[in-house]
Structures are given as C-alpha cells and as structure tokens.
Amino acid sequence: MPLRLTLRNDSTVPIEVDTVRLAAVRQQTHEQVLAIEVLHGNVREPLGTFFDAKGSAAEDNTLVWEGDCRRIKRIALELDQGCVRVEGNAGMHLGAEMTGGEVVVEGDATDWVGGEMHGGRIHVHGNVGHQLGAVYRGGHRGMTGGEILVDGNAGNEIGHSMRRGLIAVAGRIGDLSGVNLIAGTIVVGGEPGIRHGAGMKRGTIVFLDAATPPDVLPTFRSAGTCRLTFLRLYLKHLATHGWPVPAGSLEADYRRYNGDFLELGKGELLVRSA
Image 1 (cartoon, rainbow, N blue to C red):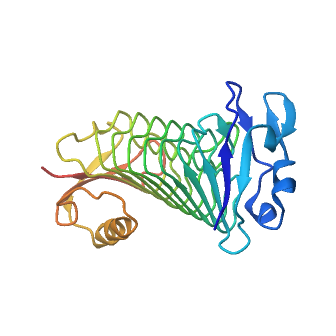
Image 2: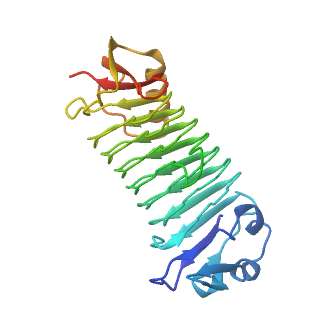
Image 3: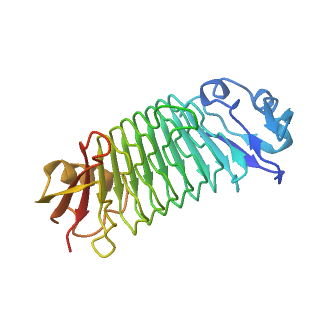
C-alpha cells in the first residue's frame, strides 16, 4: 500500500512541497511526514495543515498525491527512485531535475514539467503547460536525459535547450518547440504552432500529423523523403508505455529537413507525408 497524501485544505496561494522527498518519507511515521515544513506563499507551515496521510511507502516505494493539486508546486523534485503518482492535477515544476524513478499524473499539469530533468520517466495523461522539459532562465541546458510522455496538449517552448532524452506530446503544441535544441528527440502527434527548431544545433523533431504539417523555417533545407528504422523503434517503444501513437505512423514516409543553418545545421525535422 503506498503512502497517500490527500489534499484536505486547499489554498489559493501556491504551496511548494520540494521538502517532501520519497526517499525520506518512506522511512517516516505519519506524524513525521505531516510535520514536514512546506512553503505556503512566503510562510513555512506543516504539511499537515493541508494534507492527511495514510498508508506507507516502505514496501512499494510509492507516494501518491490525491486531489486537485494544481497549486501544489515542485512535486517529485529531484526524484531519484521509486514512483510518485498524482491522482488529479499537478502544479508547476513537476519532476524538475529528477534523475530516476517514475512520475505519473492522471490529470493535467502546468508549466515547467520535467524542467532540467536528467533521468527517469514522467507520464502525464492530460495536458501540460509551457516549457516542458526546458531549461530554466539563465541556465545552459534543459532536459539531459529520461522521457516525458504527454497524452494531451502542450504549450510553448517544449524541449528548450534540450541536451538528451525523449519528449512525446500526443496532442497539439504551441510555438517554438525545440528552440535552441542541442540534441535529443521530440515527437509531436497533433497540430503544431510555429517556428519549430529555431536555433537548433542537433537533434530530431518529428511531426506525425500529416493533415497539419508545420511551416518550416527558411533556415532549413529539404533533404528528401525517407523511412527511418530508428523512428519505428521509438514509436513502438512509446506504444508499449501507453502513448497514443497515430495510426499509420510506423509505415509512413517522412519529409526530412536539415537545419538550423544559422547554427550547426545538423538538426532535423521529420514531417509525415500525406
């Protein structure tokens, strides 16, 4: 039975729970867990002011956040092992800087999901906000490893300055996906915004919806049509984890564009042919 933290007293002021670490709470009693101080606005208060606790993570190494946690920030920050589940919505910086383990969200999440993450897997079954797997302002690299799977939609600047790893969004996305991409792979299942891959050096951005292809920036060059084995392997891998791969994507041909030639020009956009 996992340790279950149930939201009892919601607040219009965001609550930061980065002090609630799975590695620590799995060894603690309910009283010790609820005594952990969290940041409520600019005031520190016990976790028990807002949550009830039951169960234990000692055996299954699983922590569950239950309720509408859209104003609960920094869930699973720097997670390195085990599983964190959110049965509801999640707030900003979900799974930021995590190095291992798994985070699963049954509802939606907001901005900065997987910000500068280094490993592990995040799977959001709903929608997410902006800066998915992105670099923080003033930083040099965004996501450097791991996987982020989103079954719904995402906002702007997904994979900003991403260095390594896999991001897959099944729905529509906003603008500037893969901006300043250093390396890594981004897969988009739905309608895209604009200016994708601007400033990218290496890496791959794949667009699976043949009905709504992206407008390719003029700093990219066409490199013909291809059918790539590595992409079939990636899509099969995503399907095994429950990500909704669009029908026909494995057998389709893809138009390839290299760029951004304002940078190294070694990146690629793969756009599914009609």
